[in-house]
Every structure is written in structure tokens, then in C-alpha cells.
Amino acid sequence: MRQAKTLSAHPARRVRWMNRDRAIALLMITPSVLAIAVFVYGFIGWTAYISMTDWRGLAMSTTFVGFDNYLTIFSTARFQTNIRNLIVFTIFFLTACLLIGLLLAVLIDSRIRVEGFFRSVYIFPMALSFIVTGVVWQWLFAPGNWPNDPTGINLLFKQSGLGFLQAAWTTDTSVVPGWRIEGLRTRIGIPMAMVPVVVAAVWQMSGFVMAMYLAGLRGIPEEIKEAARVDGATEWQVFRNITLPMLQPITLSAVIILGHISLKIFDLIVTMTGGAPGNNTEVPGLYMYEIAFKANKFAEGAAVAMVMLVFVALLVVPYLIYNRRTEVER
Image 1: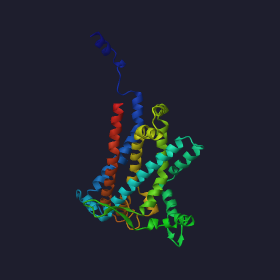
Image 2 (image 1 turned 180 degrees about the vertical axis):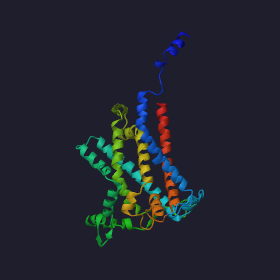
Image 3 (image 1 turned 90 degrees about the vertical axis):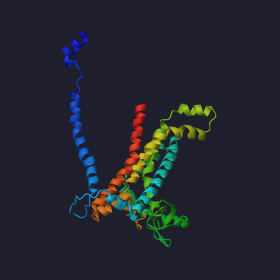
Image 4 (image 1 turned 135 degrees about the vertical axis):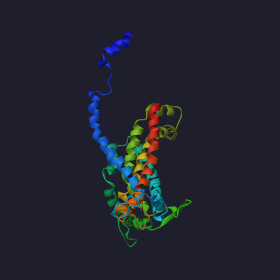
């Protein structure tokens, strides 16, 4: 009773929810919160609404058609080809970046000479945009009049005695047969014209993965490895049973970041192939641009955009949930 009277007699001593520091903090973040609410989530909601209308042409239409636009794009052979290309690009891009990045990180972690030089060389491509990367590699993979008058990579192969490796590259219309998914009109194969695009993307992003893995390797306590070696473990066993498991969080983060990039890839495709030959390198991002801003089918373009958003969400949201649960367990 005496304690209760003391608290009531001194209300100023109670901890208030809104004090001066919190008020200033809320005042500082309010513009950013409002901007994100309007220009991110507001526009996402607007795009979702437009995708369920029949808006075509410059005259805006708000006639509600439900999921008709989604059914239209998924029943289109061109969009199915885009999905195939996106799957192929993502698989090869992720796999190559992870393997090359891990290999480079392991080599640099071995304390080689001029380590700083090699680390800078591998990370440097990240300073370039995909537009610049696409232009440079488009020149390199330009087939020229091969095999008689080759250019770029083909010229290098010819002069080094590897002429049998010459190819049409970005103009190659062939697709290596793959597997078929029930309900799709197209076979999941590997377009040969997609190879230069994957090479360019891996060249730019593998250094980023290397930096992530290198940080992870430097964070593994050396005492654990030494204890395993004392117990008779070989270097391969140490790497497989200790290093790789401890790099799993790095691998997961790299997969999320690279997957996010690959699912939204647009600029690299535009500068290197423009979706050609045919639609062999076209992806949903480029298809959305074509039908929305060239064919003026804004509702169908919005539907493609929402499909891309769902793809990204399916990749990112589980990672956020996993990361949140991991923090709670800690």
C-alpha cells in the first residue's frame, strides 16, 4: 500500500511511452515510412488492381475482369518460353556463382601472395552495371562471319587452335532438348543463346559471392580445424565436415541475393540479346516491358509484374521467416 501511494504521488517518475528521444526518432523516420508506404506498397497494390482490369491502350479502363489476364499470359506459349528461360538462367547462374565464388574464396584464404590484388580484381566487376557488362560481353560474343572471319571469342578460339569451339553464340537458335512439364507447350531445354548471358552474369556476380564466402572462411575458428587434424582428419574431411557446414548461412544468403537478381533480370538481356534469337533468351521482365509499353496491354503487363513479385516473394519470404526464427532461438 505504501509503495502504491508513493508511485501515485510521483507520476513524473513513471516511464512514459512517448519521451523526447522517441518523438524525435519518430519524426525522423516518418517521411521514409510514408514514402515506402506510397511508392512501394501503394504502387504494388495499384499494380495488383490494374492486373485485374481490361486496361488496354492509352484510355484507362477500370472494368474488373478478375484473373482473366493471368489465365491469358499463362496460356501463351511465349510466356511459357519466358518461364523456361528464367528457370534455365537461374539454375546455371546460381550454380556457377556459388561454385566459382567458393573456389576463389578458398584459394584466397590460403594466404597467397598479393592477396589484396586478386581480391580487388575479382570484386571489381561488381562496380559495373549490368548495362555496361552486357555491352562488353555482347561485343565479345558477337559471332561475326564465322568460321571464315570470326570476331571476339571466336577469333580467340581460331588463333589459339581451338576453332572447333566457335559458335553463333547470341544468334544461335538451337535449344538443347530437356524435359517436358505437363501442361506446358514448351520443353524445358537449354537455349544455346542463353550461354553468353549466363557467362556475363557469372563474371559480374561471382566476385560478390567470393567476398561473402571469404568473410565466412575468415570467421571460422582455426582451433576447430586444428582439433580435427589432430584427430587424424584429412584436409578434404576438414573442409567437407567442418568448413562447408559452417558456411551454410553464407550459402543461404548468397542464394537469396542471387536468386532475387536472376528473377528480375532485365538489363543484361536487353543489352546482350534483346530476347533474340526469337524468344530464346526472353525473360518475364522483358516480356512485361514489351506488352505493357510497346503493345499498350497495361493490364497484362501488370499481371506479369505480379507474377514476378510472387516468384521473388516465394524466394525471400521463407528466408525472412527462417532468419527470424534463428534470431528468436538465439
